[in-house]
Image (tube, rainbow, N blue to C red; front, side):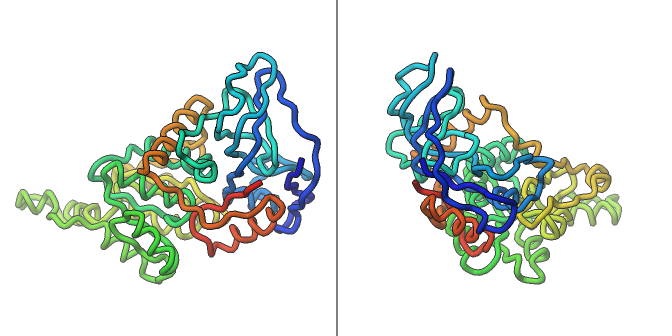
Length: 347
């Protein structure tokens, strides 16, 4: 079978097409004929040798962790009824024409949902849905989403709106801003503008007066009034899928008692938020560890987002599709940051 393999740590050019033996499903496993493989930004970072403490791979290796395809064979002890089923699955080494997975890993794809769309939800859909659960986004919450035009950001915008939140989306440039506005963001700020933080604060502001003003509380101290005013123009939840300086600049936009999730690092590092400051302000911090799901939870979340997509309530944005033989070009496109939404590989 054909696969894309990282020959050595480095740039996109280290991804080459190779012929590997066809995998054979062992006991308790299924064999999946891959239609589309998911890609995520961190795979490009791992390819360069970053984050080796978290991703201890050594070249040569086949990258990727998610597929959509059809089960074509099963191993010993597996119900033959799996054969012919369209599924998504987390796997090891998804940039390949065929993969094996434990029978507990695949999730059936609903009728009417195409496999390319399903592949775009494998990682980002699960992470987005789980993130909104963990941060308890609910009706009336003001949510600031950084990296809103990316594969997961576009899903977060839609899912947060579906939960009744007011969404302020942060994206870079007019084209990406227009996309997230089309997806339902209540307001959009362009992070390429020097005053984007102030614009975000204005967009997050509540039109109604603060509680102190409503009550006419003359005993309210100046400090409390200032805090009330600041919280009236802040986010109950900040979802930082970018990290670095942008994530750090967004932290002060979190309301006292709010939630801040630093789960993304395409900038090269997670936002270095001051934990002591967060504790002083009562801000609950979430990180990448909070979106590492067990098998059962991942299957539940996968089934949820696939059902939402099949019903037309969730639309993953696929910015480009590359054939497996052009995996290097796909990584270059991902790193170039000009595309919106997801990049998927087709077999």
